[in-house]
Length: 319
Image (cartoon, rainbow, N blue to C red; front, top):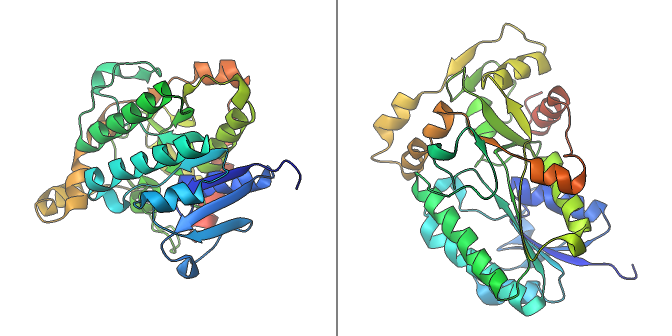
């Protein structure tokens, strides 16, 4: 295709990386992705050129990004484990590749950066005082992106709440707690206080938002940061109640998450220790202020909640 742009997606087998990769292919981009063993990918995405490589290997990332106009950094350490040793070198490799290729980095951000003093409605430029180790690493990753931007690298950060969607990975609370992928829904497990609001990001909506921002790359500042509102449930448990409607089981039980068990096992399981750090996000409302995004795009892409949940549950093999 004449004039076809190239994008490199890191983490294309994950939730947000896969969703943005699919959106790029649908927009006519030539998409590359790296994986340590492409032959073992269970469900390779159509239209993506897979390259053997490792996001921890700078030479692999730089080579894969040659000629790319965009690098999507959607890769995260699995299961909350070993973030500092993995996340920071990977973002440094992405920055090195962007310096070489001239690509803009797209970085899906999280709410981990912010402490309760900024709640309940958080704008892009609020002070970042994270309460967790993962939050401090996220702040450091964004700081490195900002420093690279000062040196000429173009960056787009799009922060969002907890992910859900047909491609939801095991790193998501939706697939790790609310439902059990691959099984019919017999009960919904809700991790938070039922009366406390919670923000969720439907992956196709988030990917479409990223694409609309990318389409207007010429209008973006060199370092651009936006907040994605997504699906906000004023009573957090409303998402569980909506799942009951989506599976036509209005009396299905909504159970409490076994935080006590996580606490007991946390001395022995690193993932559980990291999960415990996140409890404050389930006890206090944190909503991302998307007014800057709406002012720039005119609207935020938004799929009705029941449609989004049904598609998610079908994709996860639950419906």
